[in-house]
Image (tube, rainbow, N blue to C red):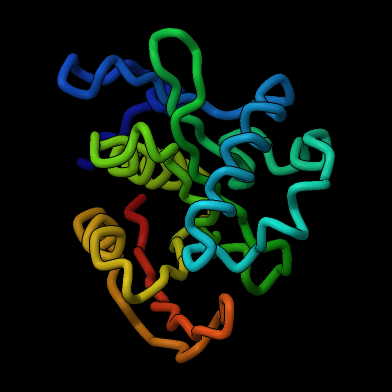
Amino acid sequence: MNHRPPVDAVDRVEPADAGAVHIRPLVAADAVAYKALRDEALRTAPDAFTSDYESSVGRDASEYVARFGALESGQFFLGAFDAAGQLLGCLGCEREQRTKQRHCAVVVGMMVSPSAQRKGIGRMLVEACVQAASQVPGLTQLVLTVTASNHHVVRLYEQAGFRAWGLLPNAIVVDGVGYDKLHMVRLLSH
């Protein structure tokens, strides 16, 4: 028998080596911190996102609140917070809305503040996202795209059980330079 922890197991504190990082779903009160992290990520890593800084920086933080649904909906964002409550990183799950695609969700918006990178926060967010998505009734797979040249992040997803299934050459163009996007999938066990 496969025992799965309850959905609220996402709300946890990691061991001391992770700096007591607390993972929990984002809520409306987190919108300003989310927007600041997002704007920083779009500005500092333009090749990692399909969105661009110039189009996003002027948006109001309240416009992002609709992305912060309940875990059981399959439409949620998880945040990694330090002991002081500062948002260090986030990752989203967006369940497909069309009937024939409701078994799929897209993992989006992996962002970790530059000062918090290379500390295992991305790994914790991916693990928590997979765990939460595994609890959503009828959700059987997660898909994502990642900039193919970002080998560190590709490995992070592979270690979490994602596998590549295709490559879109020049999926995004930043300052005249094309970047390929690797498509990945992870089946969920229920």
